[in-house]
Image (cartoon, rainbow, N blue to C red; front, side, top):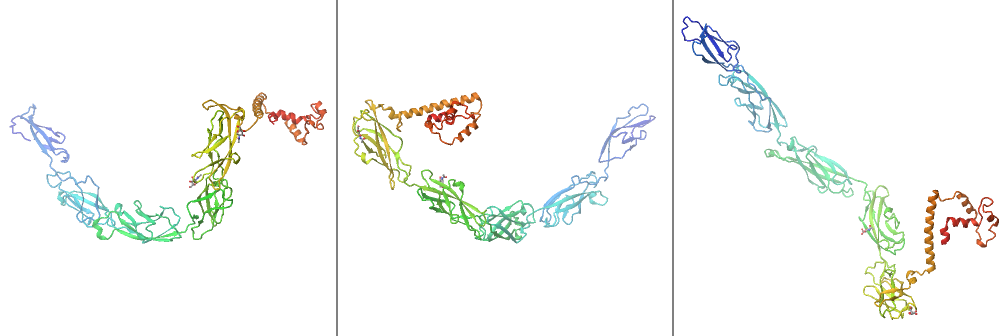
Length: 632
Ligand SMILES: *[C@@H]1O[C@H](CO)[C@@H](O)[C@H](O)[C@H]1NC(C)=O
Ligand SMILES: *[C@@H]1O[C@H](CO)[C@@H](O)[C@H](O)[C@H]1NC(C)=O
């Protein structure tokens, strides 16, 4: 820097201030030359703003206003291009046409993009040819070969270079890598590993069981490898089905309907595997499916016997004779080596052993008499066992219905008690009775009532059958008198409508009573009333006395037991029992003076400590068993 001022005699001094003054830039205060005292980097700081001033050497007074100036750092190519985002990954579908864009990359150069070519980049591929190409300016990477096949090579490594100075020699360069993965397209059909599969299956296999798996391989991956399996032909299309297992990408053959070795021993199926997701671009390559043949051999299994019917219903009359045949069950062994079968009754279902079965021919016979009125149904289970293999067992329910036979006579429906008023009128209904019959005739009950033949002309009573099967008893005259006769017994014959009919005679007791004017019974003979079974008053009193005695004894027993707090058996119990056993000859009662030892009676302790021979049992019984003594 130089000032235009004439220095004259005064000496001038230059001063520098601002960006980097004194540290990066220095001024010679006499000559005004500015020097850089450090290395500059444009990429760090491209411009410096400084101020210079001329001052008087001695007084330091400014000689003119300060002047500002700028120092610009000029670029040189000192930075190589750099790929900041590398390494790169990209995908492109296999079988893409030539020139399909894959991705683009960018490198940056720190040098000045506007000055010179230091930042002018050109891209090229160092590795990865001839598969990929790059556009030199835009860095767009494209496929350079058509129809690249993922199944042949899936991954490619591409090395990309960026060079500055417009790619000319002397430029700086940087590289990066790009990994290109080919993605799958459905360009391969499924193909069965075998053209023929063999499976075997026992005939008794459970429906739905997997019998075998077939697999068509597909070189593609993911959904492009997915196939659906179908049975398209064969003689077992109705019995088998195939389901596709998307996970394992195979087909599972399952049983849909029961097999029978004895009917058909093998089946042939034609199965097809077809790709689910077809790419129309490749359909010209042929069908994306394949077929294979599956042979299934049915194996014989030992099967249990089969009854001719799943259930049996038998009917038998309740009066069927013992050992008569009620019915028959039949069963056969379905196996080729048909085994003979033995029958038995599951005794848990026939606890009363009502029936027997012929083990060979399955005929069921009656073992004990039947009674429909006790039980109508006998539901039993019959077991069939193969003789050659006892573990092959089948069971069948047999319901045996007992049919009614007229084997019960009708009788009064309840115990009727009839009262007849002394002041009753002739023709008055004394009582209405109905009958019941335990049998169950098809057309319902119809009862016939009659008086005993010798009573038909009974002067006192008559009977009249009602519509509803009941019977009314009517008085024939008035003037019945308790004093004359208290009770009348009227036997009535009731017969049913069975074939042959059964009948019984029930006797109606009619008691004559005193009644009010409007026919309300007021007084009857008590004894006759409470003792219809004909016990005397004496007998009744005896029974009552016994009951009271019994109660007293029970109370005594309990009290005694509490008091002694020990068992009621006397200590010399064994002695007493011994004595009783020893006296096996019968005493002759009070008249038996021979058996009565007067000497021992006088000395109650007895010679050997025994009680008197006659007196012991009586006394003992009276002591131990007063109830029985009294009541007997
Ligand atoms: C016995 O079987 C018959 C017919 O299946 C049925 O109607 C009846 O209720 C069964 N009886 C008993 C006691 O299980
Ligand atoms: C009818 O009643 C009279 C008395 O009232 C009696 O003597 C007679 O034995 C009765 N006849 C019959 C058949 O009960």
